[in-house]
Length: 401
Ligand SMILES: Nc1nc2c(ncn2[C@@H]2O[C@H](COP(=O)(O)OP(=O)(O)OP(=O)(O)O)[C@@H](O)[C@H]2O)c(=O)[nH]1
Ligand SMILES: [Mg+2]
Image (tube, rainbow, N blue to C red; front, side):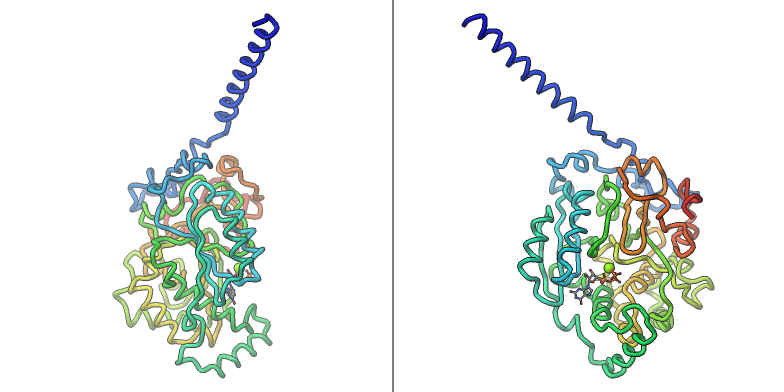
């Protein structure tokens, strides 16, 4: 070998070494927020240790290995038996595409959870092609059985039509819509019983055009399971009274007929300011939900839904699935089984949940404006939720009210 080619080989070796070193340095420089687990513990906000979830340190601990290494993914065995679920029309395809992109980029690309899409009509090829290309898990497409998206025989359809006309004239939002009513009834009483949903234990509801503003550095499904949580929320607010004038009467009738279903240590004080006489209209905003399907399929919940359904308010008024789910969670569950996910930053028009706590927002690479956070503003019920659970509001909340 000439001295020229020896030099050449030496250059090549140096270059290879340099590239290898660069690779290792750049990989290890990926900032991994080691302390997030502490920030994420729900008990961080508690005044007292009233939690019934001694395992929270484990469960609240983000799975760093899986959460920050996209290529590794979550080992199958580590995943909870859970799925995303979306009710949508074919025309929603581009709006749901945005939501999926957000969910994948901020969370699911590391976990590959399944996604179930439900529709009252067949999904078309474009919808299936676009959504399957975006979801990193397995996608499933289901048509809703007709009997779950039509009038039960006890409903007087003439009366229902007159109500729609009247609510339309009074400009009540979606007051004149028939399909919106079927949608609210379906979300209240049926989606969790669709054959595609029967094999799963937990669901995460995703609607078109939502945004997630922060990384989700742990597995919320796992958190729910390990801490025996059944229902969770990120935003809460007051319901529009004209859509639910007799809902509470119906709830009281159910409680009278089924006192055995009402949980001890429930959240009645979240729902009522007078011990249950009247409803204060507080509810969790159900376009975001992570919850237990087994709870929704329980005798307690089904008896509750059927009792409300027979009273007719899905059609004679415009009962939303948000107050229906929330009242059930508030009365049929123990307080500790409902969870507020401060760390999950979320937007559905027109409200934003941007996590309170600057360090948390930095760690999670959030891009929401904290002053948009709705939690501590006058029309939110989240302060009330904190109050009834003896939770201390996160530091910095005053600046966002
Ligand atoms: N298949 C089907 N899905 C529907 C229908 N109406 C609403 N949806 C879906 O049901 C969910 C709730 O409907 P939205 O129109 O978002 O209701 P909303 O959130 O109260 O109102 P927006 O502020 O308009 O988002 C969404 O996931 C919709 O895609 C319908 O007629 N058929
Ligand atoms: Mg919506």
